[in-house]
Length: 137
Image (spheres, rainbow, N blue to C red):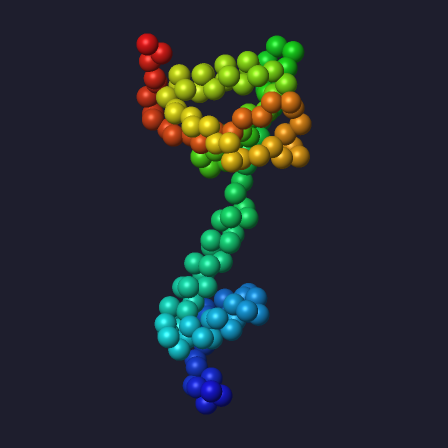
């Protein structure tokens, strides 16, 4: 085994990646070197890191709107929108407005209220963009 490790050549790009890896990922990388080669092992770890960072760094756009005497908090992720307000009818009117602008919303009850959602009513939707308005008739 040590003879095989002595024969491994790790170039600058691979070494930069290797230094960033966690201990268990370094072992996996060294194992994959034998099977996939240096480039394949590096690409596998890059894809793994990319997936982890995509899950962690999903950015949200949060906007508070004042509608009459109520506040509506709209939080938008990639294809998810959450609405939070003390007045349920305001949420329903906002959903209708979005649909009239050419988007289909599908309710997602799997998304739960978080600590930033302080108002009484909460609804989450998945957005499907059509690009054309929907006729109410």
